[in-house]
Length: 554
Image 1 (cartoon, rainbow, N blue to C red):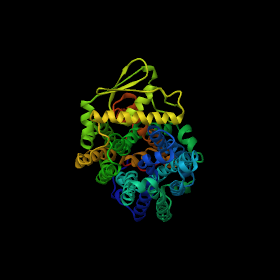
Image 2: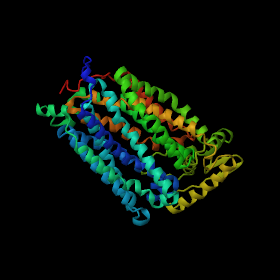
Image 3: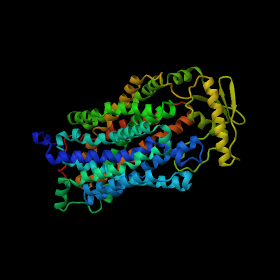
Image 4: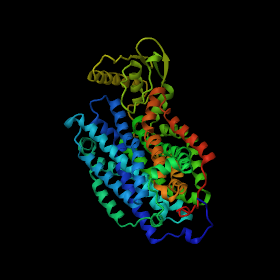
């Protein structure tokens, strides 16, 4: 698509376009709220639905249940992207929001494992898969809809409203969870109050449906349909027959979305995970810190989109990727010092060693849950990672042993134990490790009086600012890459492959990397490397599309 000369009308927002942006933004925000409840409540869900597993494995399994929704997002992108290009943009995202709202509501009614046993986690993951299909269709339809209504010379700024929806949805989920937890208290919230945020999605579904029923179909799509130029097989044409379009899909994936995905999830989801699971900050405090940083950061999504209208999509997004790759390690080290200074001190003053036969140590990433980690080395690595203890590994004979200060903790072999025996032995060893670590200066939890709250929020805001720089112009960049007849299908797949797989699996991959290496920051390498590779590919192959006419190829 070819950039065109400037015209004042190219920046003017019509009343209908204003209504489209508002309705799409509100509806998509509610859909992201539903989707992120799982991540925000991963700890509670682990206890309720995976209680038969040991605490470490149950949390990883809950993270994988969270990731299940991401893994199927590309399938939803294909199904509903095709629907959007054949039937209409509006119809596609009406269907997706119904699926999302109902599956979230049903999750709030689902009995836990103590009531229906193994059916509970199976049903939970099934509902999560439905959510993944729905969100896979939502974004492509909404982005295409808004982009085709927005003025072309201000498209970055106006589509950036839609780009705030994921962050607003995450913020809304944190506000609701924190409000319910604060009103009920932790005991009641953990017992039954956690269901309230899920059940409340029914109200949000009704509001979203009302908003979207007021909209008319995209004028760009309507013109192409009236001219008889819609694609009868958008999947085949987008990814197989049209080689130029296939190449643009690859560039969008490797040179744009993959890096954006890890920046988004590292700066918001992983930051919350790091605060609560690694730095041991109380959940309510962590949610308030992240919520405050999101509130501060949201306006910069619009600023970033407007900058991309002036300076180009490519320049703004790639600069954000470079800044993220360079700053993540300093920012997360600073976060540790601000949120849990006792832990930061212990990491330096009380190094821990793991002595184990190298052949017994495996990489503990298992998204299909097909492996059982029962060697003494693997058991030790998992416990140390859960306790957020830095350690170095030394090769040695016999069963593994953990050296904490002057304490030596022998680790058992679990291959011949039943699941119940394995869980009990892990729990006992975990308690012994906690006592030894505490004696060496490792805190069991962050001291609320020692947390530098303003500095924590400032660091989290810096992470959100990186998200805004990269994500704000993304919708416009993706919409402008592809022709009208294939736009919904073409942009949906790379977006959801990148965000569903590269981004959605980030917490699980990062945890596995930490468990493997022994350094609590080692998981950041995943985000840094992906962001850097995307920067290089984007710099060389991503075209500049700012100001393109979306009707030009109609």
